[in-house]
Length: 131
Image 1: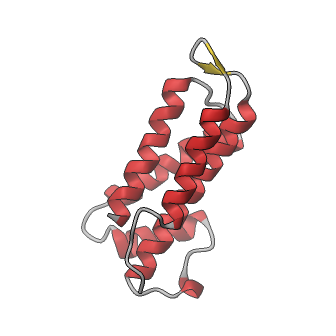
Image 2 (image 1 turned 90 degrees about the horizontal axis):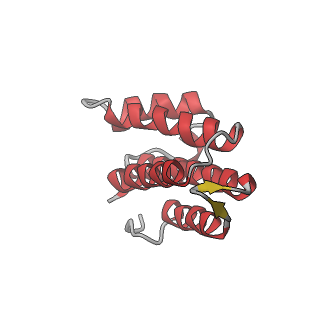
Image 3 (image 1 turned 120 degrees about the horizontal axis):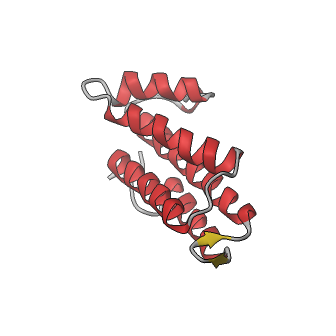
């Protein structure tokens, strides 16, 4: 099995998300063009899924056994990664709500500070899983 390192897929996705935000124009601490912000949130959420997949493979699951839905990810986190501590599951649910639903799907988040905090939270979650 390859050694985990910062150049893994999850970290690459996070770099892409940050790049999308850098290209987005702001005015008065608000992103003006929401499209790249939504894309950044979607990419950050995919980074989280990639990190969970990598952590599950490290626990012995095969690619075919990886979750196929958000509910599957919740179950897998609870079963394999949060056995004695529900922290990862709670963080995943929170990130799903903020990144995927509010940020990507509905495009509700446009405040620069809020967006940056959510991206930092995603980064922290990934690092806790993989490093």
